[in-house]
Length: 470
Image 1 (tube, rainbow, N blue to C red):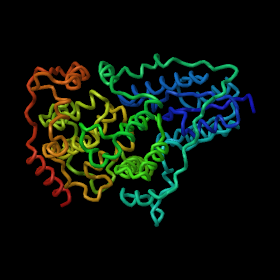
Image 2: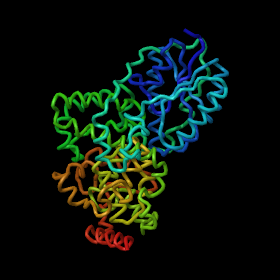
Image 3: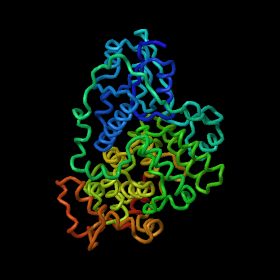
Image 4: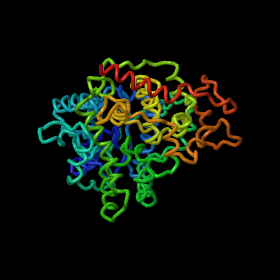
């Protein structure tokens, strides 16, 4: 046992269960100093993700205190901050969980190289995904480009059991100075929306584990048949917690697999959705510019419109298309949006309104508390057409028929559209409390007329596609 501490650099892994980096740092009994660094990547986050990250940090700091530990907060360039902490504490090891987007990979490689040059042990660990992206290949040694064969390739793989919960972290003799999270003002860009969304967040490891337990107890049996109905409450909601590492994908996988073996009807489909997230990261790792460029290069030059007034109506949930508007308003009220609704609003923007998918991607990036760069990029490209889909463009979701099928009693639309209701529910009224005052919106106003006829919008989109194909 050494008295020289290990630094545990936390990023998106705010948990004690199945945390390989934390377990490695604590393994030989040395003191562990957890640290979070507010760097340029944190600063660049959109309003909702940055606010929600701040909640995750604060909650984990309190959880560490319960175990007799602390979370040290520092702001700056990671290599410089870690070197400062090494100098202040005498640490000889630094551990962290891997991230897989290109900016994080470049940053982490530079940190590892710099620390090793200083004679320190710098170790990265898995934990954000089920599989390391470079370990899943086709028979030709290429990355998969279609989900179905990807699923077939991984569904039978042995996934390691979760690492046991770290129950204790030995504190150092002296703690380094920490900044205060309130001074970072991570929720400033949310303005008045923070108070509205705060009623719907589920922050921290305990909340995540409770969510998983409730889903497996109450909903997994009907997951496949009910998951597309936004008002049904049939989904797990765990995307929020996965984003911040408040629960690990391996923990979810093994819990779901146990229910599959016990015969739960929806278990396999639930596992497929977890692997869909994995597939998004697989693509994002191999095509790191997926959030900026068309994945299929033949889509370059397609005649999408740049940002426009119709897109602004879409952003405000004021298109006159009830299913679309309800979904956008759900995002402002809860910070999330049902997955079926995400497909519908993305299709409406890119096809009925002929607006560039990157306009929508950037808006989600700013507004979703469960924003995940890989899932967001793949989702928008998949719906818009340039993404990894076997039948890309002529899938044009009709929001009216989608509403008939997946919101047949209108409950979802009533939950989030106040106009026209004599006593709208709190969720519908909350939209007007969450959005910017500059929008000058009121529930007393008339609901807007449709900005585009659905049939005409679809035909315009398909004609544009045919012209592009030549």
